[in-house]
Amino acid sequence: MNSANFLEIANPVRKALFSGKPVVALESAVITHGLPYPHNQQLALHMEETIRLQNAEPATIAVLDGKIRVGLTAPEIERLAKMKHVRKISRRDFGIALARGESGGTTVAGTLFAAHQAGIRVFATGGIGGVHRNAPFDVSADLHELSITPLIVVCAGAKAILDLPATLEVLETFGVPVIGYQSDEFPAFYSRKSGLKVNLVCQNAAEIAQVALAHWGAGVHSAILVANPPPAEKALPADAIENIIHQAVQEAEQLGIRGSAVTPYLLEKVNQLTGGASMQANLALLLNNGRLAAEIARSLSEMSNPAPRV
Image (cartoon, rainbow, N blue to C red; front, top):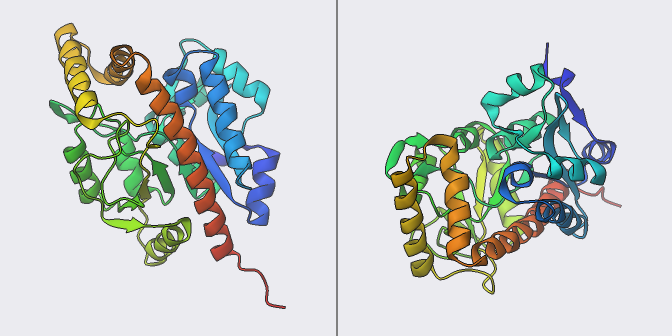
């Protein structure tokens, strides 16, 4: 049985893809596991509206009732936002969720997989997963998926709770180029700077699209990771947030928190310790990434489907 039997593409997304119009994929784990209701619903709708204002079509991806859904209606987003105790779906989880008729939110890796199946080439997220601090064997599936899936992924770097130097080393090993948008530093999610350098700086969306088309045209099938610093007015000072993350990591180790429970615990703890400032930064960077992703999708569409000469 091939994947088309489980893949349902919403009509607006299907029409945009068929006509060559820009489409931006959006993950849904941030809805099911990232934010409480109704903040999760509000964010999802705001992300979609931000992309539409840039003349691109949003495609929020999730698994609903045993189907991979590419593009959700507002009522479906609300339903997803209200769900409790649903599965977080990475590549390994699709078979389980589809066979059992489950619903769940797709991670970066899961969204990459589904978006590629649908023919989408641009994806906006907050921060990718990576190598965990003090646990170099704990490597997010996001990194492997980036190495085998040809999409442009716009993010604010990797989640700051991770080991950022090690994460960049794995991306290098996997052949994933990291492009800084108007910055030569890899952002640290909440902060604009990490002290770590990117592979290339691009000043606009068209430059990024050109690199992606050349990358794939040469026969390389990995993603292009675009590191977009969070908005300056919402970004947090790197030193202050690093001290808070260090405290949160220590507490997680003392409590014996392991595996997939680590990231949600750390993000919630950091939010508590910053008095909600980290969540505000998270929301701002998500919308910022959505805007840039839509601009890149437009450039990619124009380059791939040039207007006929008169």
